[in-house]
Image (cartoon, rainbow, N blue to C red; front, top):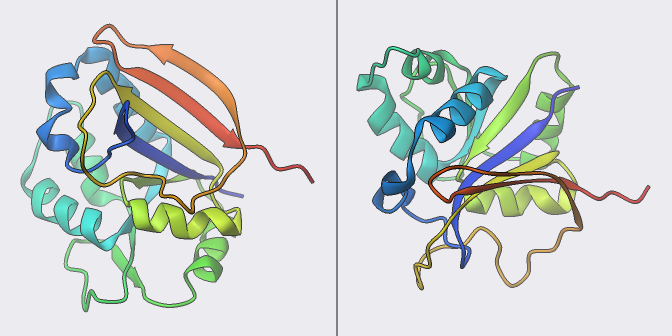
Length: 182
């Protein structure tokens, strides 16, 4: 069974919106290696429409020596949207209905992790269905004050901390797994 991994850049006050506008001053080789290893431990991306469209606009034209761009461009991509008509990025599949059921089926397939980058609305939609296996929150030492947040007023999840790591730039990795009392 595959795991669904949520990976987020998040500020101290919970903002995840537009990390390209605030995360770069903290980027370093440690974070780069973490993100590289995370991507290469997965074999599919699961994205909401907004994140998907942002990635689809940026990644196809990128290249790098480490092979990150080639990897992200070649992976199967599953985009959850009721408004997107046709996903144009290569290896993309649209999920329009029965989202929890379709993602549960993806988890049953053989393979590596399925990673969700950003995609707050999708993450919140999956939480009540117990489809998320891990949250990897890269907490940036800053407060934005405004912006979209990962967790909203109605978000609920019991989590247990599985790892912490501090990067040299002050970013802290917090890894959580659902605390499923079964």
